[in-house]
Structure formats: C-alpha cells, structure tokens
Image (cartoon, rainbow over all chains, first blue to last red; front, side, top):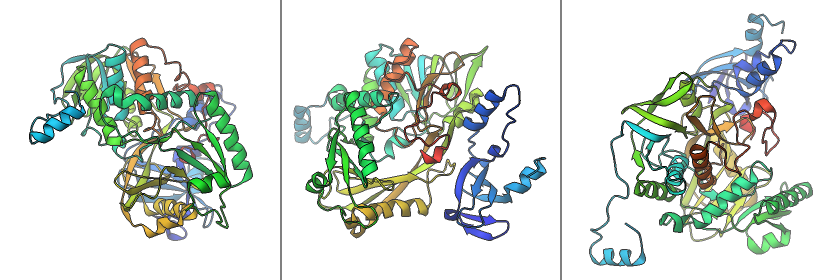
Length: 95
Length: 416
C-alpha cells in the first residue's frame, strides 16, 4: 500500500506503524461521571467496519507525524490522508 | 457409511463406484432448536458435539459459502497446547486430548500427526521464560521438554546455530504437538454431524437476527427466515460485521494473516519449528511442501489477501534460522481474515440478548482450538453455563479487568 502523505508525498506503508480506528483521537475526559464506562468503550470496543475506515498511522520511519488515513478495508484503496493534528484541532482540541 | 480397510479394498476391486456424498444438501427447515451461523471448523465441531455429546440433534448449520472455504482451509494446520495463563492452557490441553482421539471418534482420516513442536530460544532470558512456560504446561497436564543447544542440534542439525544476530540457545519442545490435515477436520465433523441428523446448509448467508423484546427468536438469511430457540454465532473474521446486526460492538478488529507453501521437497523437516526472535513457523506437509507463516499484516482488513512486506518479514525469519529454505521457491501464498481480540484470547459466551450466543476472537490460533471450541460451545448452548475449561472466555472480561493477555501487549490487536 502507498500512503500519500500530505507533506511528504507518496510513501510506502512499510514506513508507518498502524494504531487503529481514528476514534482513538477522542480520549474521554477522566472527570466525567461515567468515565470508567467511557474509557472501557474507548479502549476496547471497535466498530471494525467492512468498507470505509478512518484509521491512525504513525510515520515512524519518516517525519514522525500521526496521520488519519481513510481506507477501504475490503479493497485496501486509500481515498484520503490527513494530518491527525489538523483533525484534532478542527474538533476543538488545543493540540 | 463407515470407513474401513475392507470397504476401501472392496471399492478398489469394484471400480470405486460405491462411494456416495458424505453429507446431505438439505433445504433449511422453518425452525431448529439451535441454528449455528458459520460452517467452519468451529461451527461444524459445535454441531457435531451438540448432537453426539449433548443430545441436541435438531440443529442447522448455515454457511454463506461452501464448507471449509474460510479459515479452516487457510491455516498452517498446527496443533499445540503450549500456552501459559490459567485461563488458556487447560482449554488448549483439552483440545489436544480431543485431537488425539478425533479420528476414531468421527471415523475419518484427519491425518493427525504428533510430530513434535519446537519453539526455539535465542538467549538466556528467553530460555528462562520457556522453563516457566514448560512448568505451566505441566501444571495443566500437558507435555513439555526444555532442550539445550546440543539437544536441538541432534534433532535439527541443519538450523543456523551460529547465526551472528540470533544464535540458537535451546528451545521448548512439545512432543505431542504437530499437524492435522485441516480440510479433513471440516469434512470429518460435517460428515459426523450430518450422520447424527444435523442439517448443513451451504450458500446461505445470514443477514440479520429476529430480536423481539430482548430475545433472539431466529435469523434472516439469503434463503429465508429461520426460527430458532438458540442462535449460535461462530463466524470468526466477520464477527463484528454480523454482531453489528444485533446492535453489538465487539472488542475485536479484523486483520489478515498470510501463509505460504513452497514447492514439494524430499522429507527435510520432521517436526514443526518456530523462530523465537522474529515471527516464523514452518512444517512440512505430507505432500512435501514447506508450509510457513508469521506475523499478521497489522491493519484492519476484510480482503482475504495481504501485502508483500509481511511476506518479506516471514521469509527473513525463515532465512535467519533455516538458511536452506532460500533454495526452495514459494509456490503459493494466501490470506485469511481473522478476529484479533483486544487481549489475544477468544470468546465463548452468551450475549446480553437471550438466545443469542457468541464464539469468536480466535486471533491467528483458532485451528488448534477447533475440537475444544466446538465442545465447550456445545456445552454452553446445551446447559447455559460455561464448560469448566472455558470459564474465562467471557465478553465482559475487559470491563471487569480480567483480561487474558498471553503476550502482555495491552489493547493493541495487531501486537498480539
């Protein structure tokens, strides 16, 4: 697979480390009343879809950026690559 | 029809005209006591033991493709019971004991070959860890022998003992480990179950569940609705996809694992060997091909095919311990989709929906578990309580904090 890095251009997927579903960006607030349940769901449960999947890849053998890759789990086709930081900031996070 | 030497002899003399299909091809009935979703090894074993050991014979097994088209026909055929944790090892040893009597039990030649499985170690800490594991295996009634370097050399003189990076220090041998003809396991269980009255329905894809008031009353399928008192899901690889139809999210990601087979060679490899410094395992099939595999590709996929970097990694592992493998050409490679659970261990459990049961999360190790998985799942379905060796494989174990993390990797499925 080739991942089209937004800054570095097309790079071999072997340069990256895979973390998993992009929902892992949204870490729950530990002060929430039902934080144990929220952390259980955050840490352990996955949608695991067959089809379009947004997922986190880390460019370990490159610029060490975290990317959100939109990829089809049935065909391996990659349709979108974004910097995870841009997504987190757009969702209201400060970094 | 029972197989026997006399039957083979008489058929040979009469042109082999007396053989018949060994299971029927029935249409689905409108209702069963138990509907098993998934006609792979585990589903067929469940049906067989339900009928044989627990007396529940009004059972339908629904398979979306043909029997053996999933992971029971895609694995590297290895059986072993060399786990360590108390939640795992008694279960896998129970499975090993069932393997040892399986051919007589279902009267089918599954080519069970206990040729010995050797895990190589490459340094002192690893050897110490193997001593600990061996003791854990003994505690569960399994067999384990700790070998030093010279013991290994006597058994496998062709290994690369002087490898500069990963010299061989010794290993942990399970003499009762080995290989089984994987397709024959599916066929043997299917024939056995069919003979006991189980309906095996192929080309029948389950598309949803009929859930009324928190109770599962049956399933919807490509061949119509079927009512059932109990629905037993057994579709590892596609578990998340199917259970989403019941509104459940699982602690599972679907990944691909690849395997390869070389061209046929003379007998060179008497047992099963695994590399201790990377991930590589190899055995030689009775046809002569070296059957080998290693790590999963490591990203979510349902594609039943992988990419080249994983194959390169596997072949590098092979070259590191067994350089002669470089002279053999890879004949075929293939991939299977597996449930990678969050702690690397499986599930055999009820769900919060009454009448709906779940078996899955087998990671890349489901084949060796086939008989025990079937037996324990049948026990759960028949008695509504877990079998004594499968009390830990529960869906809520993450919520309770009682994970069974054999490798100690945490909630990162692609590292298990």
